[in-house]
Length: 615
Image (cartoon, rainbow, N blue to C red; front, side, top):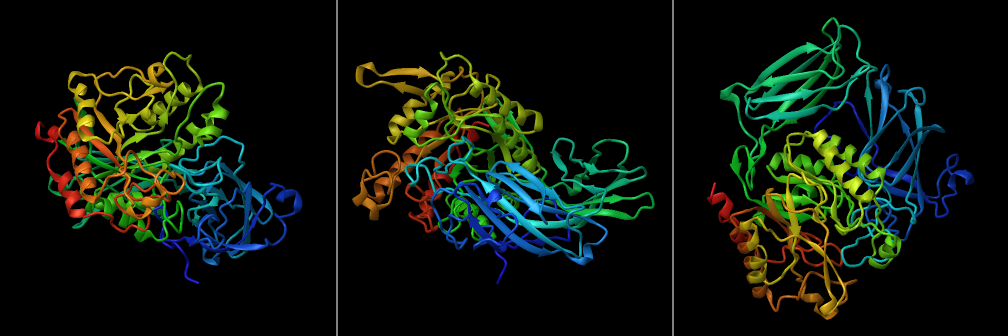
């Protein structure tokens, strides 16, 4: 059998030796979460699954879309004898949600969080040349609030904006050998002003006399090489200065990257550990209301990308599908995306880096609310997410994983949170501030948005935004005219009906930050589903469905024009790239077939925006 998703899963920190563990594993659903007591750790499991696809997906071979409280995986692996003398690391790119891993009957790791990678050290448990029996239990308790993005974690059926759940392993499982003293993942910071890359290179168990050799290459060959001690600082820092004649910037639409070689040397100069990476030289700055890339005003023509697939759910069926989604977006005239409500596979960021595609790094935590009746509200509305300490811990893992990707030009940890200004401060305020400051502490080179749309609670947020699904272009234009006077449209909660309808402010006041509409459009278009008008479980989108396709084109153009024409707006984000299950407001259908004339849509977006003309 051909190994599914065989490509290297961590393209910005690669070693030559590795073993992909995707493929057929033993599998069993543990509906009562009693498997440990019933002996599932010790015995073969009753079924099979194809990893890395979740059991809800067709590609997994299981295709069970019911709630699964816990699932178990088992596989026996022969560790290559050629790895002798090195320790073995077992990597999981993502498992949803609470994971325990045993190898040869011994627990080797635990992790909470469905979006970020974790590693288990097999030293003393499984040695090269021997067999390793890997057992994984993934729990997803239905009654425990947790960040789940767009997964329908409370209601059984898909509905409105909620999609099929993902349980258990959904990204690549793999192994690699490393020496006792080895390199960890570096943080790569570009500095366009000084034409350099700063490499912060942590080393595990560094010893006296060791040094670090870092070499930068471009298409012509070696650009610069630096060797410095690796035993005097906790995390060695290397600056690689690029000569003026070898400078090539990473630009929107032209994702030029330099290759990096990272080598750890012992006292004699012999290579102890070696890895390769890459880096893009680009800057992100703010100038008044503009956001600049490499000192140039670039209107961010963003699209909302959910990253779901009919046969793989949150997992792309092939690596090429990740690249193809970016190419489809660019074919319509978008230069950027909000990666919405999940932490995307890192291979997506690799292709965005290569193609010069701008993205906002986000987390999967839609619709946090706070109040005494929060549980009843979530039951009613289909939400079941609640702020807690796990959110910041998992957000920090995502920031650490993705920091060095040049395609990321901003961070936003929360989406559509809500609580009234007149309410007392709550744990949601703590979480909002904590996630904002975590991103600022982790990364001083990119702007940070406290929460996308709805409730802005951090006064010093770098960016201010709103979501506006007004379908009438003239009304949309009028609603945002106030931005020119420093009085932008701000989302609010509305309570009551008719004359008793009351507006409740949910955000701190706007303070002159760069501003954009980070969700708009969502135009409902699926003519073949006209017979299910009003059935939001089968087909839905925002607003009244266009009369015909020409009506769609006019509405799309009118909405984009209203925002492109605004001299104070630095970008927008159109909802959305593709249909996703019952949500049929994409520019492509769920199978990635175009629903419209792509050149016509691209022509709408390709003209200069007002803020670009005023630069």
